[in-house]
Image 1 (cartoon, rainbow over the protein chains, first blue to last red):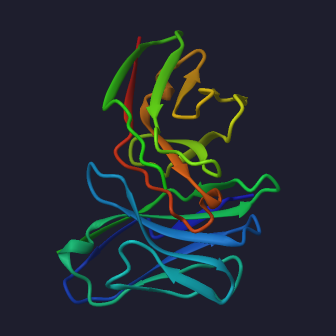
Image 2: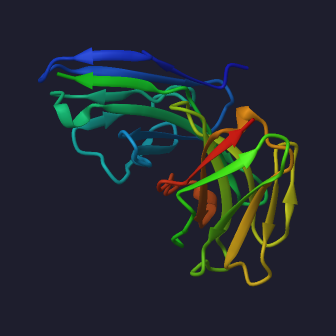
Length: 115
Length: 112
């Protein structure tokens, strides 16, 4: 049981390039999320998904796109990379417990630098 | 979602109990209290959560006041590996919409 796996761990992009951050979970969780964390700051939600085929915007979605074709995968696409997208990106997944609580499991993060 | 207030930083001696406070005076009846921690740039790690009652698991204890306006996370025997930023989060719907507001948390430094 690998949990939440993110690739790549590190990437340097030039301004205007595009790339996809991959996220896979093997826990059969229905919810998945993408957060970004700037230095010294808390996490901000970019996009989330409540199940395959369903995605919605979070607090900071501009400049990003997502898709959820399977339960396991939730890739994050960066189009036309900008220096403001330099950050650490975390993917997470969760399921709703019978109590109603929802506990997130996070990946190790992907550190992206845009120059 | 209710806003939380945590001290910016705290120190704790290794082997002693670490008591991390959190104020959430505007919490509503359907909101859970969650605690996560983040060890030096790693992904946040879930610790514990509660609604009304005190909770304990293998990592920590969560004490919620009767009026639910504040809570305390207790690490009973802190080790150097517990040095991390601890986030107290209050949210409704169990956070299923990803509406976990992490804020800046409390930086706990466990010292030998």
